[in-house]
Length: 81
Image 1 (cartoon, rainbow, N blue to C red):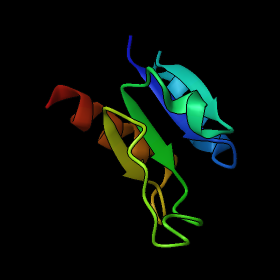
Image 2 (cartoon, rainbow, N blue to C red):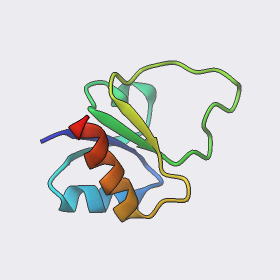
Image 3 (tube, one colour):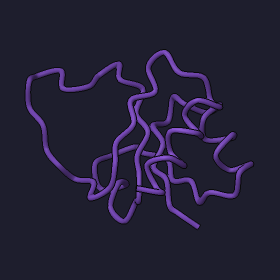
Image 4 (tube, rainbow, N blue to C red):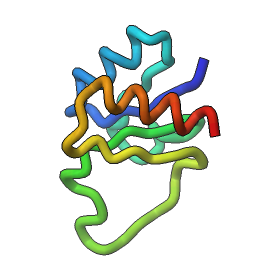
């Protein structure tokens, strides 16, 4: 099953992804994203200093304004591409 990195503040999203059988890793620091097929971020601190470092090889989903179910559908969609 795919490995999904989820920002720590998104516990409802990580619970929903685990319920669907995904291997969920909490993103506490930059290195936690290594080996993830997809990462889910809250969007609250996205690109604060106009700097971006590409750490993830897979997709990044900004969960801002999305329900846990919406995020699960987005993850599944990204993994099928």
